[in-house]
Amino acid sequence: EMGDFENARATAEEIIELPPESVIGYLTLGDLHYRQQDWATAHRHYKNAQARNPEYQSLQFQLFNIYVFTGLFETALDVDPSAEAQLFVYVYSGDLVAAQDLVESENLDDGFRSFVAYAKGEFAQNISLNPQDLTDYTDDRGKISSDFNAQFVAKFAYMYRMIGSSDQAAAFAAAVEEYLGDRQPETISSRSDLETGAIMQLVKGDQTNALRWLERRVELQFADNFHLEPIYDDLRDLPEFIEIKERNDAILARHRAEIEAQLAKPKSDWVFPDYSED
Image (cartoon, rainbow, N blue to C red):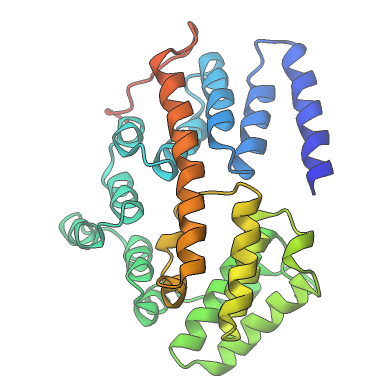
């Protein structure tokens, strides 16, 4: 996995050289570091890409997420001041009361309602608003097609278990077990796979091994708002989980400081589009 990352990074750096004004190389580098949750480095590459194409819409989304994940909430809303963006800021800052109020006052659709229901740990409500079919996450052979999909399937296995839908829980869990195989956290460098493994241990009721998977995650310097996931509620007061969260927060604080420094002294060609009218 790390070899793939290094090869892709080398290719992107070559693209930047030919020609240097191309947005593609910087976007690719940003995406690579974003996937590794190297937020400060991803931010720098995305701002370099934005300097070459200020209208590139995916940059708005990625920059917004970086600011949210690193706790720069006001900066995130400068990028996207919409009600939907405000909802994400409320959820990822832990203000679920404000999030629910916003859903009602803005009459947001079921997708956003299910998102808030999940954040509140209201799994039955989440599933009723956002029913899932396992085939949405599998390929033509019935196998989970990506690490991102595996993480979603694991979450639904857990939720189905918690609301007593044992057949659905078993089907979703079996698909994830086949995807993970006999891999152990020490051999994995994918953030999504590590979270998937942790969730699957919780599906089995094994908190000790769930912590092993989360420990590996922070060991690799992955850091975001993972601790807000209601799936981890049963771990929340354990000393090992508290230590993992503290290490996670320290990594985020370092990225936040680096991004703030970048924004305080931006490169001369960086642009700051006004999205307030979008």
